[in-house]
Image (cartoon, rainbow, N blue to C red):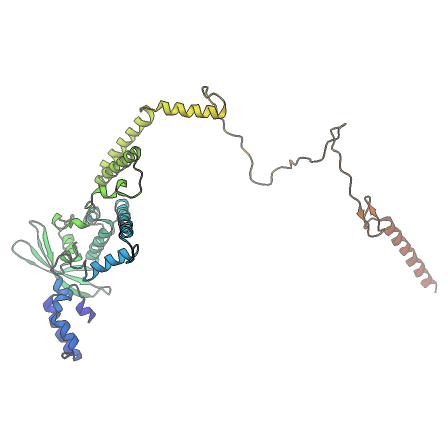
Length: 396
């Protein structure tokens, strides 16, 4: 049912035939709801809207749902008129920001071809970033997944029958493309240009066979082109909360002029190079030989002189600082913290603190329990006792 109803390539006559076959296959001829929906099929089935321009861009409830979801983010039904106007300005500013982001992606994207066809580069230069991505997909699929099975000559041109392959390389549908070489007008039975606004893969397949390297002007919808919106919409002056001082306005105007020139020369490499050289020459004139605000510099020098208390008239020579070693262990350069004797330059050592000897149980500074004399005497007397006892045992 879904494949039958929502097919974008099906004609109304084909839909009616397949609908009857589907009802007979599953015994649904007497189903009340399906009979009612079939009676108003021209109001909801996409096959009946395929000849209406841009029919795929707007659904029945898209307009009200998009506006409701847009304003519910910042506003509510309990807001006053003043609050609603503030929320409205916030939402409009958000939309302008999203548009500036899309414009930046379009102007800053770099072309990378995937088919080695000149028409792909022309599509990149014509359309915005989002639409050029879709058009280049159609060019790519027209080269790899479409092929011509038959041709017929007509009065002013030629009729091509193009087969389209699916992911399994099986032919799914055959489309009819009529090309008039005199004015390069073309039409396809899928009506992709009427429904969405750009050419389909079947037409690009025919263009590739006929060595057509540029998209005709009559098939470039203005709403998808790069320069459809005036540059004033993206200017800084149209944003909320910007600096309105004269110097800020002049700076913004200069940036807008440069951006407009770069956009106009986006596809001309020689023009961009020449424009860059002119900008460099102007930069050199301004920085080296241009007028300098002496009063402002004098005020700065006077403020520095007053702060430092010195005169800045003479030349100042600056040398590189001495290198220091800040890695590794380094050398032993510890400073002695001992106080100096008044009569000599030698350092006077502080007196040692007495420590408790665990053998003689006295606080001393000359020895500890390891080298105490009392411990040595005990060890000597113990050795003598052991010698006498061993001698007595031998005698016995």
